[in-house]
Amino acid sequence: MTFARQPSLFWLPVFLTLGLAVCGDARSQQTAQPKPPPPAVTVVTLKPETVTLTRELPGRTHPFRVAEVRPQVGGIVERLLFDEGKLVKAGQPLYQLDDAAYRADYNSAKASLTRAQARLEAARLSAKRSAELVKINAVSRQEDEDATAALRQAEADVKVAQATIDSAGVVLNRARIAAPIQGRIGKSSVTQGALVTANQTAALATIQQLDPMYVDLTQSSAEILQIRQEVAAGNLSSTDVPAKILLEDGTEYAHRGRLAFSEVTVDPSTGSTAIRMIVPNPKELLLPGMYVRAVVSAGQRAGALLAPQQGIARDPKGNASALVVNADGNVEARKVRVSRAIGDKWLVEDGLAAGDRVIVEGVLKVKPGDPVQAAEAGSAPPAADPAAAPARAN
Image 1: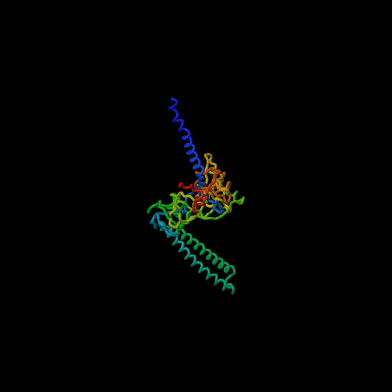
Image 2 (image 1 turned 90 degrees about the vertical axis):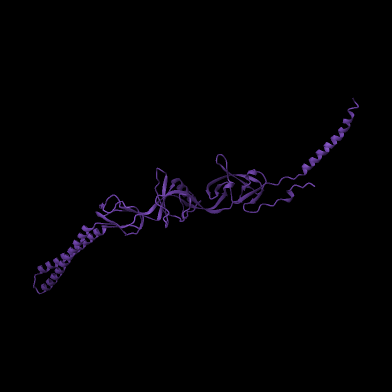
């Protein structure tokens, strides 16, 4: 039995020597492997710039002018002189009423004027003769004064007759109802043969001027107060930038609007105030009552910092943060406060400064304290370091 175990004990030192040699070779190969290069990230360097702060407000369109056509005299409608839904001009005849009675009154007033003018001529001749006769004492001074008074009365009668004919002419002209403004007229509420009366409550038709158009917007009083406080503090400078109009489907309207006025009273039920814009509408694309949105200017801010939205992260509580590359090339976490979105960027209020390099790509593969290779967005990626490449085995 002792002779049988001797061969295995003989080979044990050999096996141990081979094992130690293999382990030593593997350890030397592991020690010789180089460290991986720092991860590459894309950054955006923040630069101060002047931006125009805007606010999107809801609103409704309203006609620039609205006129309800009503009769000023009574009568039977003889004819309609317009096409419903068409464009009418100011002063264009719309309705013709039966004016026989008004024309008769006008003709009677003209006759009264002619009679008064004849009496005036007779009184003028009588006064002229009396003035010549009184010089030679052919008539008394009393008769001369009576002739002069008769002349003055005849002149007054002519003026009264002229006023009467003017009044009759006004009434006669009102029997032909004309458009008070230029615009697009709607449907008529009466037809031929209908009886209308002066100062009736129901309008015969409505005319709306659609070019330009009013856009009435609403803005909360809290926003107005905030803007005024920022202007007073010097953070904003007021500017008069035409407003961009967005239609119901989200498309941008071809024309910009300008501010007409801003209401000074706040509606207590809504806490908002009214703003009226004037918008050109040459093709009448905007119709009364349409819902639109207007992007209005709140002011300009100089030296503002805009950070790309993909570089700003938020935690479950809504707190914003960003990863930046510091001067040592390491990742650094920053707590950030942003106020509003401007395009695809956030307006930074606090936490970042001009010159900070905000990581916008590669955020998920780095953490604070890691060294990184930073490349500016839009530039060529950094070249790989040849010394950092792993050695190829021979």
